[in-house]
Image: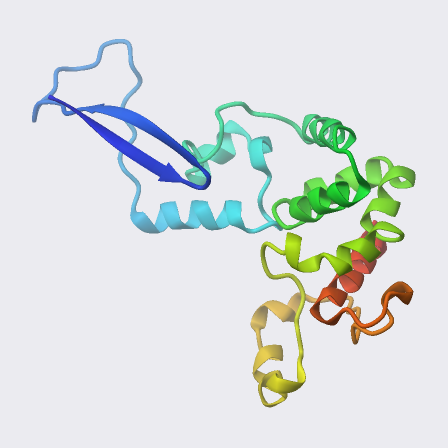
Length: 210
C-alpha cells in the first residue's frame, strides 16, 4: 500500500511517497544494517545544535559528526569545508545590488553560523568591515525592523526597569567577555534610532572579534 504525505518545513514544501512494509520484511541483501530509531530527545538535541549559531557548522559537519549528533536528514548529504562555505558566501555577496542587502545578508549569517561569519569577515577585512560597520551600519540601524530575525543582545528599557535584575540573571550571560552599550541616541549623526540602535553594539562587537 502506498500513501502520499505532504511535508511542510521552513519555507519549503514537498511530497514523499511511503510504502508500508509487512510486519516481518525479508532481509535486505546488499544493504547495511538498519540504524535503530533514536529517542525524541536526541532529535531535539540535533535541531538545537543547528539552531545555535555558536555550534552550527552547516554542511561542514563531517560524516562522523552527523552520525554522532543525529544530523542526517537535517542537512544536505554533501559534506563541505569552511573554505568552500566562505567562497559561496563571497559569490552571493557580490551578486547583491546594494551594500544594505550585503549588510542584511551578513547579519543573517552571523545569526545562523558565527564561525563562518567571522571566517568570512577575516578572509577580506578591507572589503567586509565597511559592510559590517560604518558606513553601512547606519542604514542598518534605520531599517533594523526590516531585517530583525532573532534575538541578539539585550534590550534594557524604562518600561522594564523593574525586570532588569531578572533579565541579567540569565545564566547564558555568564560567558560574556565584552559588553558594548548604546542608548540609541545620535547614532552616527542620524538621531535617536530607538531599538534600531542595537545595530551599533552588534557591529562593534563584530569588529572587536575580527
